[in-house]
Length: 79
Image 1 (cartoon, one colour):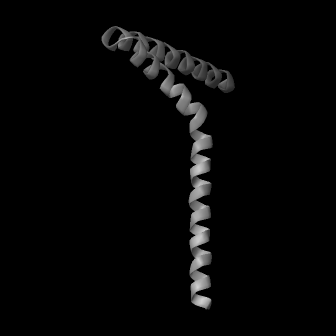
Image 2 (cartoon, rainbow, N blue to C red):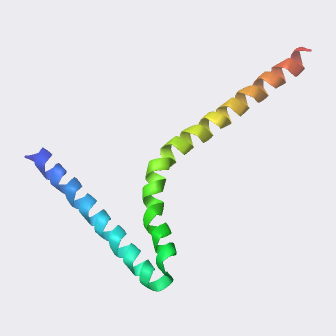
């Protein structure tokens, strides 16, 4: 029974999120025009789609840079 309640809550949350996104996009369209509305409507979807891979790439780049600095420091210290 508890599992069904959680599924219904998640479905309700998804529907409300979609309604807010559509409603917000329509309001922005009326206030600012078509292209800003498209940008506002697509930005959350693109962020959810592209955000995690971009964050992973940034994290890997930071760690590689940190490792290279560590190696360079040891090379200078060794001789």
